[in-house]
Length: 308
Image 1 (cartoon, rainbow, N blue to C red):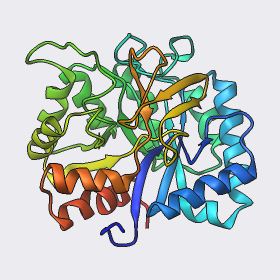
Image 2 (cartoon, helix red, strand yellow):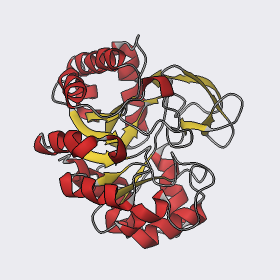
Image 3 (cartoon, one colour):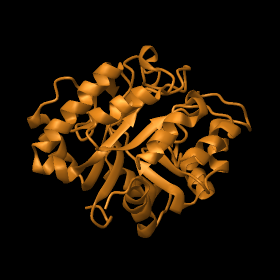
Image 4 (tube, rainbow, N blue to C red):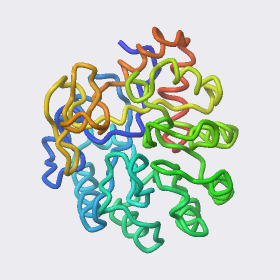
């Protein structure tokens, strides 16, 4: 049983319990099954995450998710909103992660509005690359709409990151991931973000694979618990264990460590770990207190995107 009051709040869930939210064939039965599995794992609320694809495909998937959620009382309770992750990301290998290069594009106000319309007022969080948003036009659009804007899959300079924060960006998506394995020693995206932690809510994946727990402890000490959020970044394999699964167009292999990788093992493609397991890692691996876990797994994410 988790020790977090009211249940976990997960801002990045691509799928759960064998269900891929990015499937073109998502059914009402599948959505309910995913929500039942989330509730059984102690999750009170999520942002269902739709990732980069062709704009028309993303819009169809958003429309379908909204329609299915509207018809299911449990889904309305569990799915507090939608996280649109992409397609306005940095297309460079290493930074784009699992997002397909052929669907990534520079930020565009009209295309962003199409995605927001397709999300039917449920969009609460958008992840984009500040350096691909000319004059921060999309960030300003989202800020005016009351939608939390997060940088991620990106490599902005410090000046570009500062300009984005001045325009309304307030979050960073899964720091320590979606960047190359080798970076400049000092001036890199991780150091730039940590230097701005007084202005950013910073998200982390706490499975011990995406970021080793030793490094995660360093990041949390630098950013401060009050500026941190732990997300799962789960895909369909969550709750099912090792095997082969799908995330949008990708076939994903999940190993005994519950990390989701490309079948050749070359790179990560999400996670299959519950937030209950994340809390165990935080408490036993980092010696965090109950109140610190409460902040990272429930209170801070609620506050960051305005979930009551």
